[in-house]
Amino acid sequence: MRAISYRVLALLFVTGLTGCGSEIPERNTGRSSGGSSGGSSSGGSDTGSTDTGSTDTGSADTGVADSWPASWTRLEADVLAGVNAARARGANCDSEGVFGPAPALSLNPILVGTARALSKDMGNRNFFDHTDPDGLDPFQRMEAAGYNGGAMGENIAAGYSTGAEVVAGWLASDGHCRNIMDPDFGVIGIGYASVPGSEYTHYWTQNFGDR
Image (tube, rainbow, N blue to C red; front, side):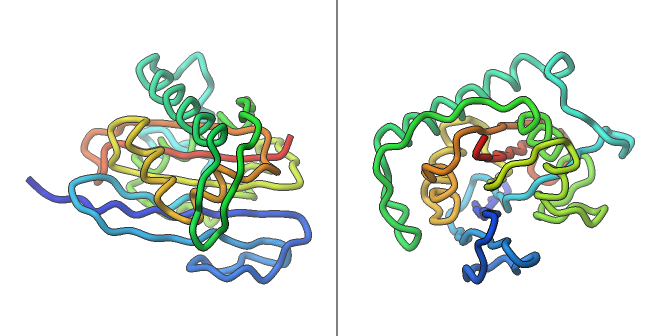
């Protein structure tokens, strides 16, 4: 059995925020990225990115709810429950700080669409990066979809087969943990897609916003 390493990476945009160090290069003034980490075997991988998505033929995929398999939607619901349970408890995100309890996140339909589209696109086009093969970064894709938040963030993952596993992986990474726990975020979009024959099969995206 081939071992797959877990990797986690987060990306954050806050209006007016500059100069935050990380392993992801700063995109432009006001944009900074979260930290990354990785290490164990026999699991998943993630890089934290957004994408407009693609179908199996490479064309754009909106990830609308009526075309999403019910089994995928249930996995997304598991992630939302895990995220809000963590926010209710508070968490130590190590280098990103200690966060007390925060209000639960609610689903934003625009961010659900962008999260689903990226997860499917990563599997279909077999890439794993914040910047998609068309050269668009997460914030460009969220804005193009009609989201105009003052704060935006993203976590992605691949290879994890359950919602509980992927939430645990994100919480174990400082940058991902920070995005999950950030009290400035009030809404989230969660997207899961399974693409057999791709490198990791299971793909996950979280898109965060403040409204």
